[in-house]
Image 1 (cartoon, rainbow, N blue to C red):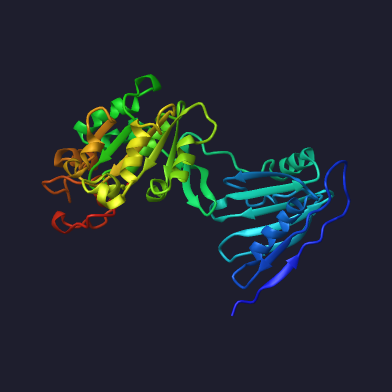
Image 2: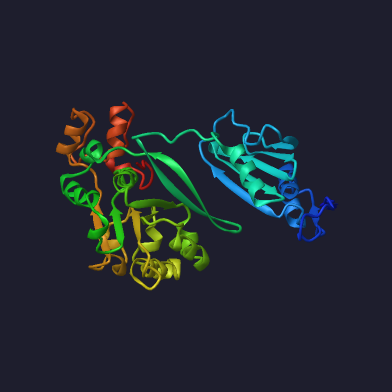
Length: 371
């Protein structure tokens, strides 16, 4: 049986200037709520009642373990921690309230309510200054990640490993390498078509390519990976939010991985309006005036894709990323041991180099071995 309890938050009756008096606030809690939810409610109550009408928030990545995420002159009044999960703290000071939440993966959210805007900014700055470690240098690039939450789209920046093109070009067939060279060298003035299509079997290095492309284009293009493409094209509001993006003068490349159902020959029947919205984003009204490119990876053969996706003029690049031939695989590995007459995928070559068993071609699973 659910036990529900009403919690009424009292507010300081002090008024400053023309600020209206505190508003009533009631919160309902039941046994489905956690201690983290209580901290969320307590942190927002001064803002909701009007006692502290200014709110400022910062989202942090790679937070230092020793960072407290609150000013030294604050008083911790609540702490809640989920085992191997999030940790939240509620901290109060003169005229302000702070909520600091540490998430898995060393990211964090810090929000401050205060009686003035200047105080909110000052407390937030003091709480977050020096809390993040610097981004890794040359071998990393910052990519954005989108996902849909209960209240709309969320975006988070994270540094990802990205090797220079010169170091990974040998991972691809001679035919693909020539086309990839042209893609890597692309600049804004060369854009003709909005869709980058990488197709080929699993384990051939499509994801590695996209990370390197993000590094190669980072001066003029922000690369964002959409974690839930089925949600993106199923929700017009979410699609608009992602398509409009954040304030940035650079181009954006939206990455949609493994979208076989979205662009396959039967996509119209399988995904409803998903295919139409994708096409509208690449060269329809939705894409007009937006400097947005879309990169799609798929395991499907080109002949099995929807003709509207691969029609001439729509694709900026349409590249088959396939296994290396036997000759190319032997050159990559330095030996022919374990390489069959049909060659090998990049994932299989890494497995051979690590002396792990590789399944014969006849019994290989159709998925897995992603790189």
